[in-house]
Length: 115
Image (cartoon, rainbow, N blue to C red; front, side, top):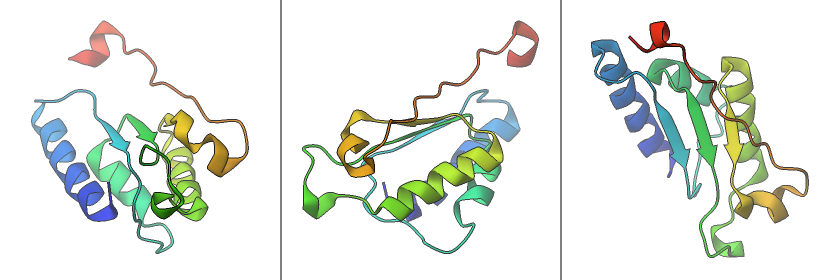
């Protein structure tokens, strides 16, 4: 996924959530092939889309040619932290990040929250 498709997905998910046709929205940014490096680009779109969970990974098979930039991964993770959105890094990012992977899941909603 690139940032154009991310923006489009956030817009569509936000519209579905606003109409009540969708209660939980997640985005899988995989493969992460390009990103807008403008400071604070990601956070407003996550909020607009009402994203509840974000999954991120790189293209498989893993290749140096399609490896995402670490700053893209860090920007997306930081935006999720600011928004309070659970964030999950796929196994294929392990060698790139050279640190333990973040493996967060959305909390389960109560019956009252689902409606």
